[in-house]
Image 1 (cartoon, rainbow, N blue to C red):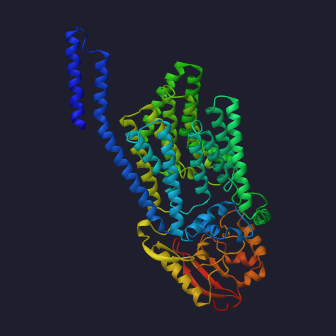
Image 2: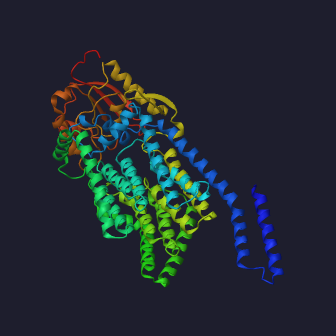
Image 3: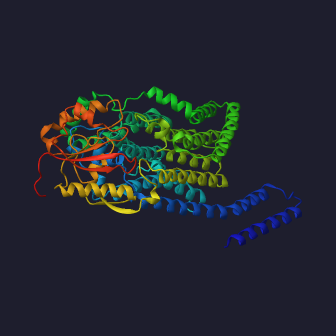
Length: 602
């Protein structure tokens, strides 16, 4: 039966019902007629909503695919090269900064040491986790797969993880691992009531992955799941059983990790770190100051969370007056956040988190006045704080870091809207707004990529980088790498030979020529600990390796200068200056020195 004929049939039924009621002396505006009218109204918006949902799903698929295809473009000589060199040979360095390199190393090998394939595998994993969470929510809400609401939820969660690429650092790293663990934890929370054993497995897996990142991430994720267990399960016996399952699975993961990781090497690398930094972070920061700044800049997120707690308390204690006022305030918050989208979107100033995170909490506040279980609202609220928990332990500004993780906030907002406004254009509107924000955030990354010379649209020239990888680069970056490769090849350089970036600004040059930087892949420049790291680096590399190593010296604003290295005991006089190259990003001079010891043929 066609859509139009079904409406005609329902209209005929109303007419028949009115006639029968007039014959029987019954009013024609009875309950049955109201139900029939409601059914016609539902049918009248069902087809447009379905079309809009399919359009969003297609658009999300196209945008995600386009971003994945572009992950062979650009090469950052600092952070991205640092991640790649650690993923390439995690056990061959004398000190370690976190254990994330051991977690991403298998993915690097799976990619065949291809940088573009490595980046794409990471993106596919993120989108797969997003779709898995969306499907779990659809099942949890008992929606038909043909329901527009179900399509909208899955389409949004497919696209939501791509917020991670707002700065265009596509290579998997510790932040990528934090995000993967966060999506897995969110999936575990969604399944906590329906599949408790599988939920325990997922929670243990998320915490095991977080072990490779930062200690505070482990603590925060564990605390979130613990609160989820206390909120979702009805009695202490069920809670203790769930925590027991989680501990059991977690112990299993620890045993597997202990058996597969080179623990002796890791202990030695940690000792090397303690020698250099003494247990402190290389980039000193104050967590208190970070959170105060975040409280000031991201106050909408905090205030919306406080509003949600108030509405949950009102619902739990039966204080209907507080609930009514809370619902009104939450409605105003959603309206104001929607209007704020009229100004320019800047991912680094907490705007996106305010819109998505604050909007999600506000929608959940409204859901407290609906026929929605309070335990389900509490679980969604816990998922909503994962983006903030993912930033803990990072030395950077919270707003700058949290811009990587608001995909989970978008998911909470969409689910909350589906609870408050089921089968309406409200969910359609929110889903399209979410897709627009993902598009806007990733467009920032494409037009102003992190530490690249040009936008991604100009990164089009295929260039060999590292051990068999090919990336599309801009003309200046390509010329810099090819000149560097030609210079070292003309002096007998072989893949895997030692090379050291002394500048602290172009460690990627070592990766680009297929070299191996001993001790540690990046001598950070521009930090209070940089001079100490440089001195300890020379001691750890030793004179024998130093004689065999190619040296790269920069002259940029933050570079460690030649005078500083000479003050630390490094003598450049016997070395041969091979070339003066131009840095592709800042135009400074990069000097290449050949080693003291002559090389045999490769």
